[in-house]
Length: 305
Image 1 (tube, rainbow, N blue to C red):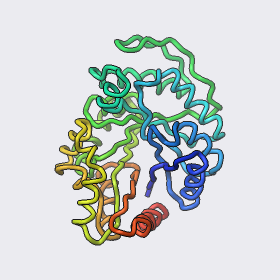
Image 2 (image 1 turned 120 degrees about the vertical axis):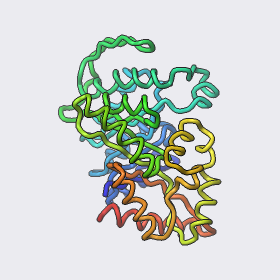
Image 3 (image 1 turned 90 degrees about the vertical axis):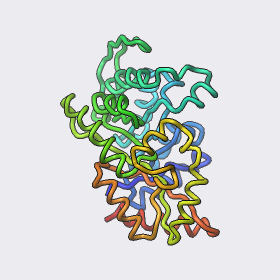
């Protein structure tokens, strides 16, 4: 199974040590958020040079603070630093409280902005020149220098129909958060796969990210998930996809239970159409270290199955 973990670490050295461990343990990918070690691309470049097999991806880099041409150049620098094609660039528009509340930018047309953004970014990272004129962007540029055979795949944080269509038409797929097996089977996979087929593209990659805890007391695990991931239940982008999964909130979207129950739920994500699972372990109970170790042990077993 293609099982990945969050890319974690408070410093670049910490990120590198954790990446080496994940590489040795047989995990497929590490997914780094936009704040990882201050800059996920710097962290990934260092982790990539210290590992040999594991894929390193962003989930996700925010689009609004960085022009697509600049992000393409930064991504090309990362893959050049690593020296082989193990970098995947996940991008997304983030959320209104961040883009408007923190950055002071308009979030009024986030779907259009992201659609245009990836029409510029993805071709550049395939080594193609871009001459694009849209509403938000006008770009005429040659691609950044990327070593032969090291094109950087782009994924979109796509939860709603417009961005799922954009992801299918213009990129390698989508990287998700809080979309359970029902949401993937009934909403995500049909929408993005149809768009990819209409564009003549291969089947898209669907990376399913969810909180996961192996714990015998399901009620306790869901209560913990509800508290730890409560913020996601308050953001409209996640509220929509949680509703598509026919659950009430993050507590019910999380994958919890004993080893057998968690394995079945992870297998259900693949059966629903996911190509990868981005597993985010969270601790439950008084012994946080033991809880994480139990969850990681199962994930390692599944990753190497």
